[in-house]
Length: 111
Image 1 (cartoon, rainbow, N blue to C red):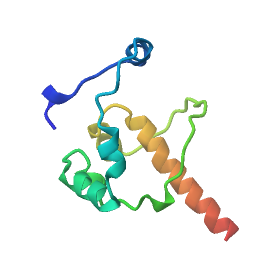
Image 2: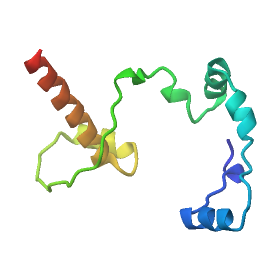
Image 3: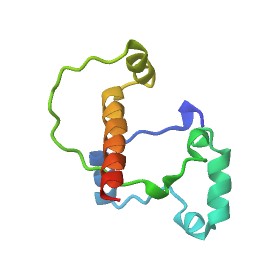
């Protein structure tokens, strides 16, 4: 998808449009008529989704943000570089990896 076709709109703008009675430009009837196969095919054709197609989402869980505690930690430089290269929010991703490890360890202890 090219950046020229991406439209950004704030929640306040959406609420204002709804208040004015403006309709959504989304063809919801077409979306509702899509089969699982149609959705999978559309995802495979979407370059933004390509890296996530073969991820096993069956064990995914909703994670609600909790207050964070600032700590000082020494990590290998290549580990930090790896996460930083993935862009903004790299510390949050590092936290998610640590949380996943913690969850797996707890389940092994219980099991």
